[in-house]
Length: 265
Image 1 (cartoon, rainbow, N blue to C red):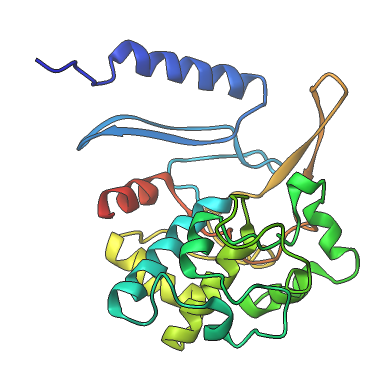
Image 2 (cartoon, rainbow, N blue to C red; image 1 turned 60 degrees about the vertical axis):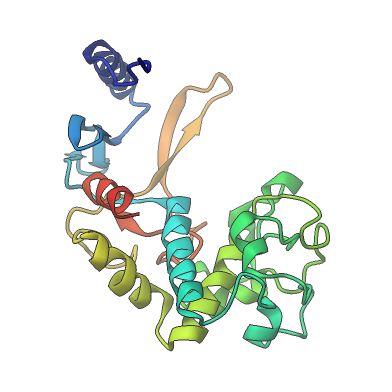
């Protein structure tokens, strides 16, 4: 007999108690859903969708999912590979016509998908670079289309030769987004909406601009902490982030839609 791997009711209650504790300490706002197979074990909302007006989250609140968006980019990329638009071994630079850059022509979609390209990120956290510093010399609202990201990284020297290491790289997924656009003639966001969100039944998901009013979209904030890690204030995350999501991050989804995506793939 195999070991029973089902979550116990006690385990679910422990998770809920921890979330309530974090909510009470004002350390967590969000929605948590737990499913095992087709059984929903837990689904509840915590904290604030908008702190300014004390609007609580609901299970239908849409959150900026940051790098979870890379999953959608990966699925879109693999769809096009399956259709023969390009392969895992296609030269990314040759395909996109970006030969006059610091990116090696040996970089392939496989390297981009697996963070083994060696491409220097636009804000390399491992090197101590901060994402908000990108926008000291250019306004963040100038980064709208996928190609707008290119000046932030194409001239930087690589960290290593393709396949010779592994280093997390946001802009690898920007390049995948450009390949999606080149292959389909559609924008990255419209392709993902039609070919990833719709087939998965993700009716509440999308890419929403921070400067446009959208219903049920949580406001992104960052905590300002003291030396002991205590929260002393909150600030809106609006100056260190493009105003709309792209291939490397920023799609807005609900927990329910994430569960639908998981089921679809």
